[in-house]
Amino acid sequence: MASLTSKSLWFAGLLAAASLWSGLAQAGIVIQGSRVVYPAKDREVTVKMTNIGEQPSLVQAWVDKGNEKLTADKADGPFLITPPITRVEARKGQSLRLVYTGDDAASKKQETVFWLNILDVPPLPKDQDANFLQVAVRSRLKIFYRPDGLPGNPNQAAESLSWSVVPAGNGYAIRARNNAAFHVSLASIQLTAGGKIHSVGKDEVKMVAPGASVDFPLSTLTAQPGAGAKVDYQWVTDYGALNQHESTL
Image (cartoon, rainbow, N blue to C red; front, side):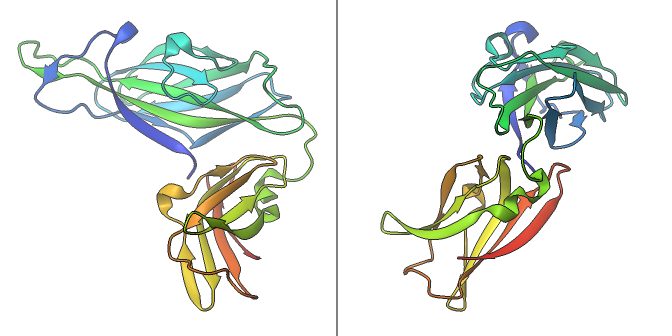
């Protein structure tokens, strides 16, 4: 379950302004996979979409470096997308071709993350006399740009995380340090200490970049754990599956 998010956006700019509608438009575009892995050796990768709705959809796609507020006309991601705008008929599929165009910000020693945005715009209602609300749905998927020859296995990177408990404000947090060259997308974290389980809030769990440390608050922990404390955590693989591992502090 990676990191895939959806936001309702007003139909604007290139795709025209929204009006009022008595109902809410439903997104019809389904994206295959929850993340995109782009090996540096590949000339391009494809992202497959399917329109599961009963009406055609207009789709616009662009890549950014992490600023979700950027629109397609200001996209700063180093990728060429073909086609950048396309109509996907009802019950039909369409593939987007992504070609990496080069970026000095992309490291050759570790993965770099970019974000693929896919904006799904439903059609106007046939009854133009009715009031309607035109709503577009944007999905954001992580693109992991992966240089050749990185040490280790990306699907085992999470097992090399090192854990410690550190003071945080008036309480404590559990710190994860990523010692691998690959990003680790965590899905859940639990600390077992003194016979009690302390869980990191679902909204607090996030990705840990290569060489970085992230502190996750533990609201129920009131003292440093003693010997024997362990961490159970889940992470997302390249294929969108959840793996689980246990580590000691």
